[in-house]
Image (cartoon, rainbow, N blue to C red; front, top):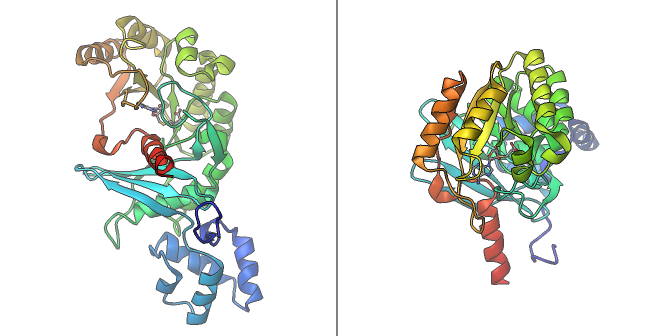
Length: 359
Ligand code: SAH
């Protein structure tokens, strides 16, 4: 029993157990090692959310599993659906912390946006996720489980996720090992079948970790959150820039491109009157010129309590035109599910505030 919430202590999630530990658990019960694969396949491919559904396992074994584990370790605290069919899940973890993940549905794609940490330690001034700092890294199982839960929202039996963007709460490269472990399972044919080429990892820009990611020799797509064309402005917007600096980040991103052959995307949140003037557009154009890079402009999504605004339509158009004239490939990120607080970290804050004020 959790003394704070009065709820029963959750059983450990099956997806959080290592295959070795599970093999040992089955062996103690005289069960063959193939049970590990069988049970995991039920959850990953078969959409099972209870052991009872695992119909090719002996009945007693299913009951025994259910007394020791739960197939999934999170509970759905809120499930919101926007008119454009964007789903947002607020998941409660076994230690009662909360994270968000989102399913974005378009004609040809079903994209999962997932979190890697509870909170975020990077402190970008406009972002809701980092307002209270980082609490902890998510486990590989917790990262994988977001994908499983979002996939389970697609039509059965064949609905699948086509893409993943690691753009939810947290700094993915600050939790790289757990993230990669989860993505490896997601990419496996017995997993969710999402190959590295369809997975985008977005980072605030940690040069050493970008190089480590490049050395893995995988085809992940890298997105770097630049948000400003010079160090003075970037450090105001992205405080960690103080320790890194734009030059180091660009050099690491160039290495990533060289090693993987994958073109890097630069994300740039447009904050009205702060980083959206023609001068910044020209400076950004010069900074990135000559690189085979793509720029993704993200008009600021309002965060309650923060003083930032979206760029005016004129400022946005002028910014895009200037970058295109500099020869860059540019896209403006579409707003999805705006009525369900799609900017990451906002729903969690709202629900946490509601729950605290209800106590
Ligand atoms: N820590 C990672 C992932 C963050 S979320 C990173 O820094 O890249 C993905 C993108 O959304 C980042 O570029 C982030 O800066 C941006 N973002 C966060 N809050 C936002 C908001 N309120 N409006 C617009 N973009 C936002």
